[in-house]
Amino acid sequence: MADLTTTYLGLKLSHPVIAGAGPLAKRLDGAQRLADAGAAAIVLHSLFEEQIRHESRELDHYLNQGTGTFAEAAEYFPDLGHYNVGPEGYLKHVSAVKKGVKVPVIASLNGVSTAGWVDHA
Image 1: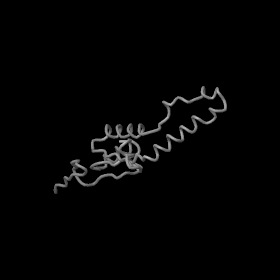
Image 2: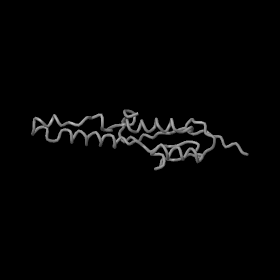
Image 3: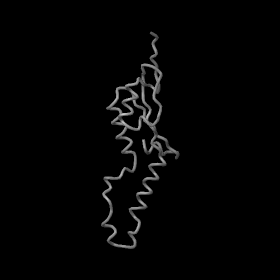
């Protein structure tokens, strides 16, 4: 049998077939199915800089809405521990997939500003 070993992004792979970013890798069980089916590596969906910025602005808007009108409104602020604004959820997913499969996992960060991807990385 032919040796199909190759490298991709500095990773040594048993063959050149990798699973590109898609809906199966958005969940751990889907990523495990991809690895079990023979994918040499798995590329996860992208984390977008504009998504992080939008979520942060939206949360700020709703937390401050009405606070200038009613003094007691500050008592109703939600517990921020329950909000997933920023890269934390994505990082947890990357970590879970890396622990759950035996093939390389490639995360993706998509930035739109000059230094945005560096800040979020």
